[in-house]
Length: 140
Image (tube, rainbow, N blue to C red; front, top):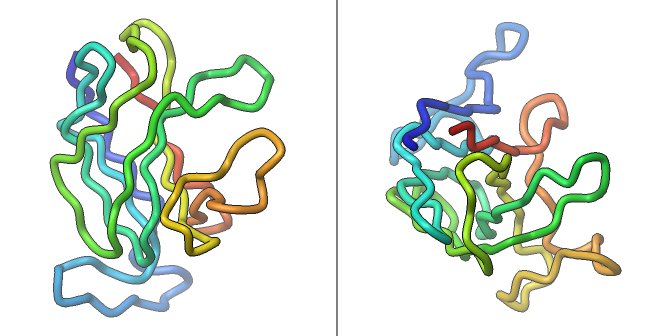
């Protein structure tokens, strides 16, 4: 059930422009989600690491087969590095089902995850290099 996926949306050098390294060892100002040690355990995904330039949420989304993905669970993460994060789902997660972990930013200042149907302009998905959403699939 362990995944061996490391998803780093940030490219350390774009067109020869290098990013400065922060005091926590992170390069640049782009978010990173790391599922290298993550695994599905019942209704949780454990072992997730994230670096984010702003406070936000790690969100479990399902594979909606052509429809907008549903949010199955989320956890708040502070600005900076968070390791060994556990995200709880509202339902059991089947390792054979495709789910993903997506970073969303807290955009409306109320410290509540508000993104969803009818409310897609708040707590929006984080964007990485090249406007790519930080969305990491859990492949079992």
